[in-house]
Length: 329
Image 1 (cartoon, rainbow, N blue to C red):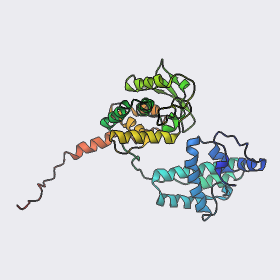
Image 2 (tube, one colour):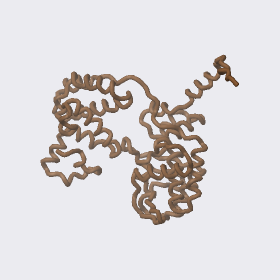
Image 3 (tube, helix red, strand yellow):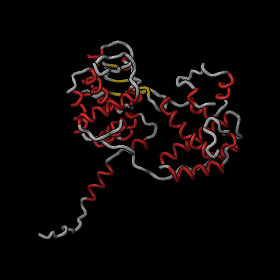
Image 4 (cartoon, helix red, strand yellow):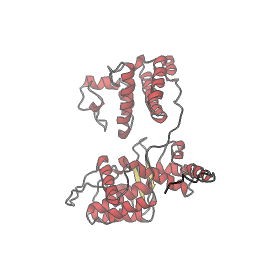
């Protein structure tokens, strides 16, 4: 078995022989990975490969390992190793993948209920880390939009709309590329978003300000032909009516950041900036959770900047009586 790439992301297994398909249908790791959204598969496959290599002394990957033989002593050792080599959030994500594969092994009749429940009874790795990335300030957001405004080509209008939507609605770049024109409700100013995580749809509300104007400007350039909302545009300004890639979103953000003189930021930083700005403005954390389509409110709470502001304010109350070294003339 050469690897999970044999499975088509859309679930089409016509390229597989009957024997290969049957093997995958009985493989708990493959069954678990097939249940995930496309954007999560690569991450979880990597996590399971790491665990499989640990269990097999670097000989087997996740699709070759016999997961039915995993027992509590193995999972306990894996937890200990992950805790020593990864941040808590990453280690716990990898352990969650392990638990799911063991669950599928049990449901496929490959493990007894006793062996499964014993093997999965490992605690999460404790600890907390700050979210990766950084917040963009209002001046940086304005500079990005201005860089797009100064570009008279169709790319300027498209990039302004992409940046405005990613910041104003918190839509992930993997969901941005999945948007179609039909997902846009101009009357109610909403977008139907197919979330990359959890395979659930939700409505994103577009603010009645620059974000709505940016999208309208792009549509006036693009036209109202059915299909993907955002199209590729070549250097000559020619538009091609097909879907953008996630890498194209990354590239256009990088390009506009350089033009605007904004320090490097990731696509996800626009999302985390929205979360912090909404909480700073007084929005309650549950509402922000729904806007960002987080499954857990604790994920949203990690982007709350207010505790840090309180600590900064408290730190300013302390006076250190140091006047500096005297310099000789």
